[in-house]
Length: 244
Image 1: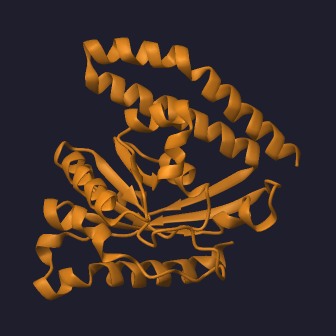
Image 2 (image 1 turned 45 degrees about the horizontal axis):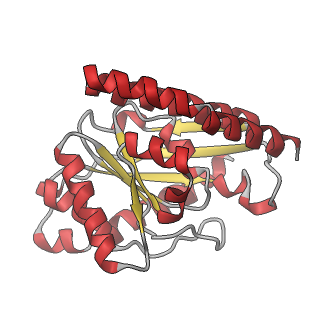
């Protein structure tokens, strides 16, 4: 419980003290937008690292060299609120995450997410969901990577299970030709969700698979790319379970 209290207090302080930082970032952005983008990225990464430190999370990262140095679509399995933190602290380039729209209701968090090209998805509104995908496509064209969890929601089932991937998520890559990077996350629910409200010292394994380039796929293969990535991630999380 002590871990949760310290992590929660730090998050509250970080969000409250963000307001003067927003002003500084705004000034930087007026002079150099790229500098502002990356300074915002590093500030948020620092905050996430502190939260992960308070939670006692140890991360084993495999295959990070597989992430191309170009705008990409990262797709992963989703079992924890901490999945975004686990992946975001490893981003070397600008990366926007697709998150549920309820996160937009937290004022200072909303500003940071918009600074970092994150998108808010209303899962109940198909039309709005399509607008989100179209905006993600535009971001990729601008050189920003996008990370999305194609299960559509957090999976609360058995540890090594996965929900079916939604093929619509992959339009971001199919329409832009950007590489798709499968990301497998093991044991993240053990940080928090498996024993609410406690944070537990946990070992998590994150593996980045080899990129898939849409141009190398046949039309039929493109139609089932979601199922293909899901199978790859399923096989990886089952293999990596032995590392925990």
